[in-house]
Length: 302
Image (cartoon, rainbow, N blue to C red; front, side, top):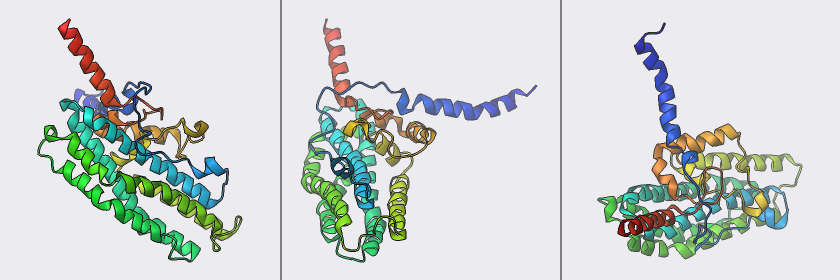
């Protein structure tokens, strides 16, 4: 018979797993959205593959980029709508959620500039294809930096001002939205470039592998316990006739772990996400919390 000390030692991993699971996004209740949701004010992107039915490497690459961009856009919209409604007890978690969005965007931008753009330029043998995209990046970086500076500089979560955050967001909203849409059409049009590799060639296969490898790494290396759950919990699996219900492609247990184990480390943040652990759109938490507070106040007065 094992000693009590050995039994306790062996039970520790199960205790840790149990604790994490109790904080996982899959344990959170979800309500279908009925109020303004995360599909505005920034407009979401229709994927090129859904729109054109093409399957060449650039249409596919632009489509996967659009799906990633839509997660970022839903993130922005969820911050925009919920900031004015926050209760004091939710402000610390909301700040964490908003800063995860910032890290997602900043890492995505940096990784494009350092890796993806260079590889595509080499593939097409054309250093000019991303000239306009580089200018678009510059158009919103200053406002994005102010967003991070404001949230990181708060002395206390209770010092948070929705008016101040929304004012900062308004300084980069228009160029940000323009870029996140135009970059998709830019990449999709590369299929018409004179140096675009032909289907069935080794160059085409290598290019497809480049997009796939970049897509896998760009989110995960940004942060496994903050950016990855943010990304996955702002993916709507119901859009475009459910065409992307199983995107990104990965074994179900791995996706479950990325959402529920990695997501448990900052569990309070994810109540602000636009979708639940199953990729279903959900009522934004701040609306739900405000309704609960109002209901309790009415009951107290009765």
